[in-house]
Length: 259
Image 1: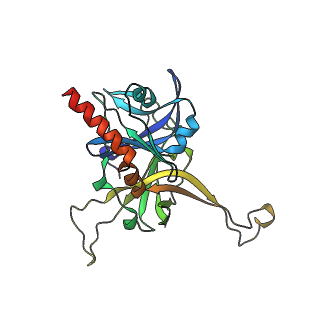
Image 2: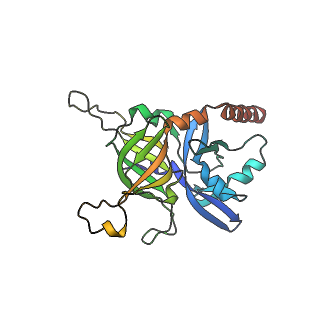
Image 3: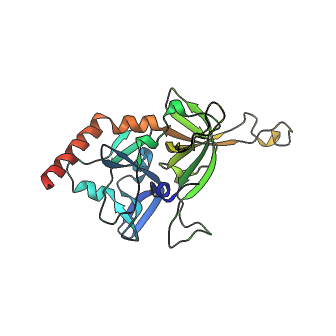
């Protein structure tokens, strides 16, 4: 079960068609590094938004609010999205207006690729918001569970058995590491919930015999639906890149001037 802090560490993300129309396209995760909170999402969402502004849905002073990240960046020189097309990740500094009700995940609450194991239980979170049965007055993410299905270590990818959909793009992969010791005991106080990565796409693995002529075959195997994501290692690489360092220096200089 995720506590309130974890539920506030991600949000719906989408394009702003015009001031009164916001189109949810996926999700984002808030990650803290070097005393800055970063909004991390899937890079392809920015591409899909084309020339539209993008923003995330968060609670500010008790109200659900769309933070227009594009507009905020346009007013702040040298603050921009940094993108890693190879891992399909994008990140930018997250504005923190008074009254914003979000939490961020530090690197100490992340599981690196080397610590991920197939069969680990995991969760994903994403939009759509306002599904039948969901409180439309208070948007909440759709959270589903599964296991870590496999790891592509060479390319920094993780695969999950959780049912995923386009609205998961940019959302978190949250893994559970059980607190058992090698002797079969329990390590009391050990953290068990970690960010393992960010969903970037859904994959449908089809059987070579997937056609109408074979569906009556007792050996027929239906398509397998998996989610694929970028590991935390790729997120760390992005947030410690030279481009990220330049942005950090700009923000720290602005803070110094303000003081």
